[in-house]
Image 1 (cartoon, one colour):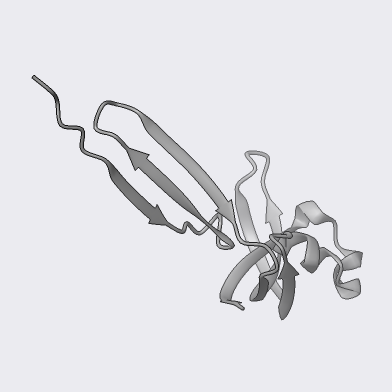
Image 2: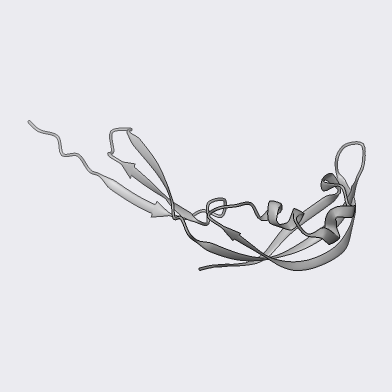
Length: 108
């Protein structure tokens, strides 16, 4: 008697890995293979909003003040936070006092 083995492959992209895909191979025997493929030479344009935040002693945000909205460009999976930090206007703020929220992203 031989057993039939069913193999299922799924590929998807997640928000924390927009430049690549995860491929999942399931053999039905409990074996799971996860492959992360990063596509190099991708350019990503991201529109972000930057806020100055204040926190209480429990590290909860108590207030937020809008500072600016801007576009940043990242290449090959570099960090949006790093590109925002390069803005000279934001240099007068401590990094721990800033919150960066992504509004829109285009990948080329």
